Image (tube, rainbow, N blue to C red; front, top):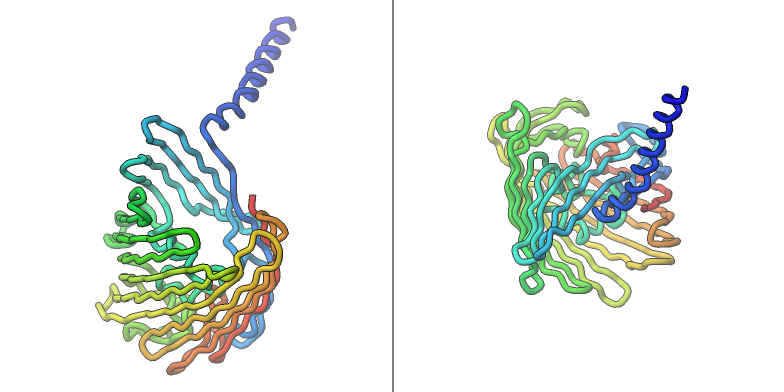
Length: 360
């Protein structure tokens, strides 16, 4: 009994020592926990003939993450980031980003792993992304939502005056030789109150569901049979230009993208073009208002979105919001299809929503 008692005491002492050292380790390694939890109610006017109500994340993507930085001396540092997406209604999660890297004061930063592509620099210039996920242009075929690339290497230069340059490559994924292979370049000019960014990105072997995404029944000469699950594989070449500029208490935003699409099945090509314009009142606390529109075209089809959002910002961490998004589509046998909502049975579709977001 005495031996057992002594062993228990030893284990307790070791556990206490470990726990007492853990916070010091986390602090010295500059590791932090962060994330966003968003949930709300939304009502969609028409999804293949019927209205649809749901409780879900439709304003901001919900996630949690860990990131850390270690000072290596001489202006160098090591860093990492790991994020998991969260479905607030069920608690289910999945990987968002996972990368490690090195940064130097004189030469910039290199990160390797699963990470946002270069078009993430356009998110702050896109009025749709200041409203809700639903407002993203139909299908997100220009990757304006903010998308991840696996097996990627990204480089960001140090500031050259007010300009930062970027480059990115990603290796092929899985058994398909070209699936996920990517390369791109961008340049961003930024001063307080103004950002201008230009990006060229090529991504091969992406999968899309044209009828579900866009409400179109044919792409690259391939009939979809109005099947929401019917997919195509294509290569994307995206050229994007975006900017924001503050005038008083209003931020004006504009973003244009031209996305070349090429079928992996028959080599046929199309162009998906999108123009977004809008503005909002950027505040840290109080009422924030936003308005915007986008026009997207593909072959003979056209989608026009309008959005409005009113947000009450209680603090930099917590806000509640009311939002409305509507779309009118035109073209042969064209149905409206707001992002992630599913195709309408007509050329119009509207979503109203309300919710709460909390950052930590």
